[in-house]
View 1 (cartoon, rainbow, N blue to C red):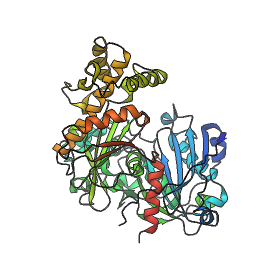
View 2 (cartoon, one colour):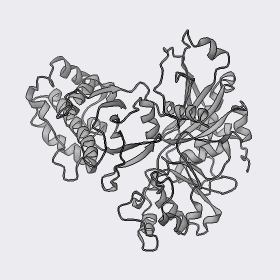
View 3 (cartoon, helix red, strand yellow):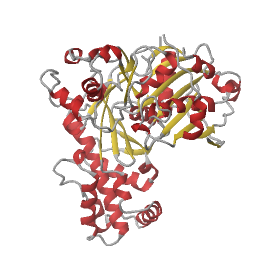
View 4 (cartoon, helix red, strand yellow):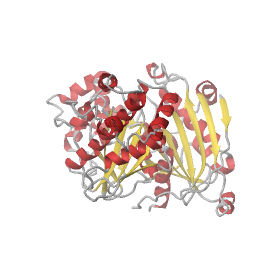
Length: 511
């Protein structure tokens, strides 16, 4: 294992507060595998003068763990929401991992478990002893079929982006009565994956349980089988509005394999039980709380906290979420709502008009140089060469939600020949993506989201481009009836692990 330790000084920030409202682990020589599969990075934030005394003498810490597609990140925060410690573990042997059996030492489940223990070990002992609450997030739609008593995987992990057509076809059969257009009818849904296992691998549901990515890793700490959260279970078919499974799900022949205990994110599950986990989380007070999906955790971290607040993640794709008092769901265009807090909904979706398009034409250095030219020439504000009017993706028949990256690139290629230079071309792409972002929020409002957009927090690679953020703010503010500017601001905290740490804090203080 290559360990890189970086010490980072940082000032203290106060986080936006969230509203309040069995069998033993089978020990293995995890360390041997970890040596081959993990790269870790650790950062410790310096203590502010006002908080140093309490933090150094036993102040409580709350831990969030984010298990993403490429690694695990851990954030520790104090009572004020100040991040005190951060560590990350990168998976390095995943290319063939999910083709391995569940018992293989290099399967995805084994790699995740290694990352769990390695991350905990990376935290200094005196810091670990102050951790009183833990929550974990994972990739939405990734599921694991486990033994109902030991919790050991019985099948390879079924990943968030894997398609299981046989399972989807089974759900579409008359015997299942899954509603047309329901999110679970997708071949990538968690329910399609469970149906696949039932139909192709094992017809006796009493002998296995489905757990989501975050559920299984949390189970490794608390050992209470069959516990999940509202957010991870949305694509399983759980209805967060009624807080129950719909009757058609309870009538499925494999309903016995569904998680039985559903809790809102940031709810207490129980104290740490696993003996191996207790070696690291030795504080007798330490509890485990329900987590969420990685994307919802990133939203919580952003600072958005009231209706009309939104968060756009501009990475390879454009993912957006808006706090609304009304629920909006339309599986045909990939819009769905998570329940957040006691009274609000997090309406969201994604489209492919993001950084992948930029990567098709420019390197990082070129993007920076051309952005400097755009800024220096005040190109967007002066509407030089009609850059403000550019909207390469407006004519797409399927709307922004259905536009494939390859089609978006082709549209840009056809427009490039008409541009005076690459700076103009890039500015027009920026403008076009900004308009696609606006349509996402406008469409959500037209479909019933209760609040008009007020403020957008942004993360991902696009958030680092201040020039583009100003352009996006300008586009989003067009036709704003209040007459005010819709600001686009970089999220103070961009890591999902920070948002999950806030859930751990919320759960600790709930009763």
